[in-house]
Length: 81
Image 1 (cartoon, rainbow, N blue to C red):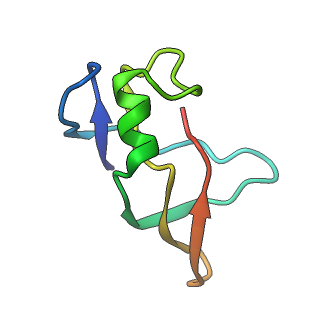
Image 2: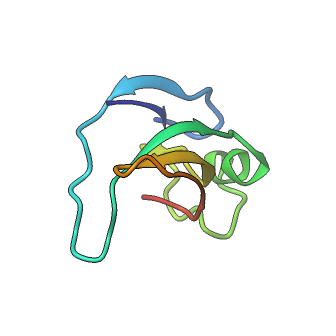
């Protein structure tokens, strides 16, 4: 799948092919339809956000719109590493 990946701090994200995530028990696979590159993402990418321990190699996806396997359109929020 394609993703916006921040490889280095203070750099523009690169569109890269990454492996599909493994769905664990209690989780659901969501097809991302749109994800923002917002102020939280920018702050994580430059290391100034409290959640940015090592902001290199992370995939943007703090919030966005997705579609569940049963076709429901949803809003999602939360950091992913």
